[in-house]
Image 1 (cartoon, rainbow over the protein chains, first blue to last red):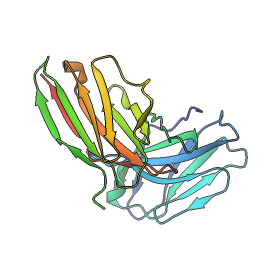
Image 2 (image 1 turned 30 degrees about the vertical axis):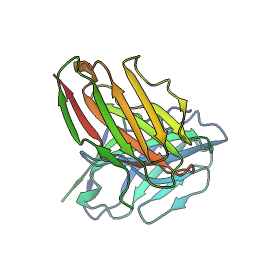
Image 3 (image 1 turned 90 degrees about the vertical axis):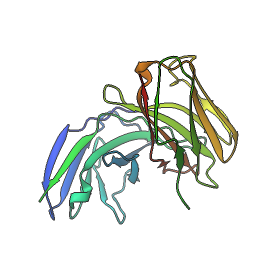
Image 4 (image 1 turned 180 degrees about the vertical axis):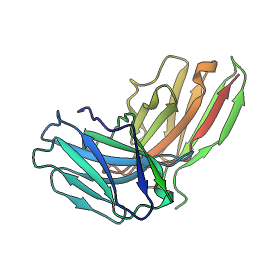
Length: 112
Length: 112
């Protein structure tokens, strides 16, 4: 699976949009971009995933560049409860299992 | 559904003792994963099962670790004998075979 690079930490003001970047310049054509987050003392939680089109769900939006070498997770109106470590993961999706390789992630601190 | 259930939530044991961690996946999910999280190494995949069969155990650190899944609703991760370096939070996750993994609350293991 392709390696990802994320900033170690970011701050965001409550109510503002949080934009979390991820670089995956070695991504292959059949690899998806997944985002998970881990709130302190909890297990990781799935947020969103995409292949090449932008995706949106009730939690966030995922913007993938045209060359697919980077992406941005957008939390449109960050709240204090969004403070967590956010993991960007690139992998091939298949039915036999969905192994995830977690890197260091970005520690997002939402401040009042 | 109650989500992925793990027990115990906390375990403190002495070096050399046997430790058994338990996981009940979400009903209907056919993939189950065991992860370990430490400050030094982050989140690591230990082993995953598909339809109760171990598919990849390359992440299991050594022979002291073993995992079983006797049926679709139960899995165990055993450490025998335990060592202080095994201290970590152990997460179990299950997946319906598609893209999202659902994580349990974790078991915090301390080996003295």
